[in-house]
Length: 128
Image (cartoon, rainbow, N blue to C red; front, side):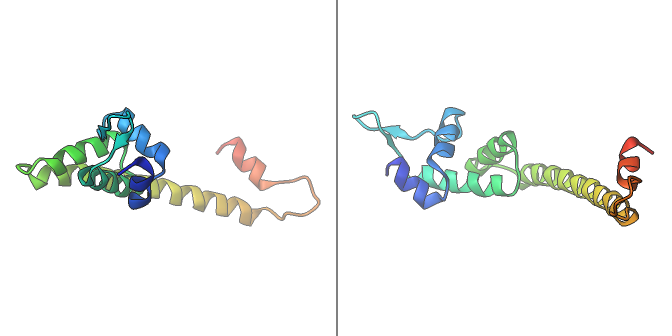
């Protein structure tokens, strides 16, 4: 199938597919005319990569997960370690976002939002 077909099948833009090829995540065959020819296995890899990216895995993590996915002798512990590390990163980001939200909510709550120049939000941004 051509790049348009595989893009439609996987839900990935052609530009993303070309990028994944450029960085070596997929290697479609080339027809005699030089055009990319994607196999079913390429489409499966692209679907896998698309889902992994939706879950926020980095390109390097995707590369590692794809290698493990292709390795039938893999240990699931290796896959779990990558996923667990990514989950830990997400949990840390969530904690940071919650703290940010709470601080900003407090600043907004303390600001009268009227015509006076006194503004607790700006004072809060000055520092503790």
